[in-house]
Image (tube, rainbow, N blue to C red; front, side, top):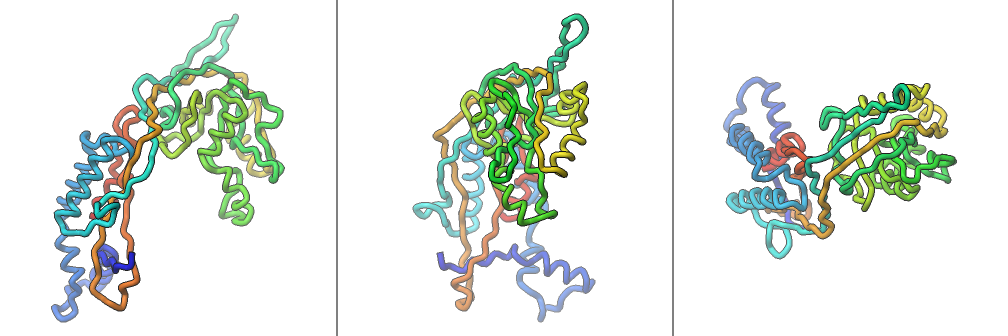
Length: 338
C-alpha cells in the first residue's frame, strides 16, 4: 500500500511536553492543529472504551473465540463511523488468518503428594491463581507421576548442553524454568545461539519428545502463546509450588538455578516427589481470527510513499477459567490508538 498514513496520535505527546515546558499557550499564529485535536479527546470516552472492551460481552477477547470476534466488530464499527477507510481483505476492516485456540474450563487441580510417617501421604492442594494457573494450551486430562527437575528443559548438542541426558522422564512430570541460562545483556552473541531454546513451544515439545506426560512451568501467568499437544498436561506454577517440590531434596531452588547459569552445566534430578495435575480444556484446531485494519490517507504528496503504523493488540486471554479482561493488556492501548 503506497498511501500516506498520517495519524495525529503519532506526535501529540511530544507537543504536549513542549507545551508544558513553556508553561504558556502557543499563540494562534504558532498553534499546531494536532494540539487542538489532542485536546478534543475526552478521557471519559477513552475510559469508557476500555470498560467496554473489558466487559463480559467480549469474554476476555481470546483470539479465535466469538468474544474476540465481537470486540473486533465493535472496533471496526467505530472506524466506519469515523470515516476511516478499510484496509483489510476484500475492502473490509478485517484481515483473516487461522488461529487455533483452547478454552480453559473449571475443574483444574494441582496436588503435591508428600510422604509422611509409616507410609502415610499428605496431599497438599494448591490454590488456583494464588499458586498456579491451568495451561492455556494444555490438553484435557489428569496425570499423577513423579516430578523430575530438568532446569530449562533444553537439549542443545551443538552447545554441549542436554538437561534430559541421563534422566528417565517417560510418563513423568517435568518441572522447568522459562527462558535460557544466559542473558542478552551479558554476551549478546552467545545469547543468539541459545535463543531458539527460549520459546515456550520448544520447551513443551521437547518435554513430550522425551516421553514426559506433563509439565509444571515456573512461569506463574496465564499464557495462550504456546503449543497445544494432545495428551500433554501443562500447568504454570509459582514459588510456593516450586519451593515445596525442592523441600527435603537437599537442594535450594535458587542455588541450583544459579549454578546452571554460572557453569552452563545441567543440574537435572528426580525430586522424589509425586504430583497430580488436572486440566479441563476444549481445543479448537480449525478456528480463525482477524486483525482490524483501517487507514487515513495523508495530504502531503512528497510523503505519499511513506506509511506510519499505529497499533495495539486487541486480543487477550479469554477465560482461564475465570474471565481475564485485559485492561492493560491491551484494552488501554486499543483505546489510545482509537
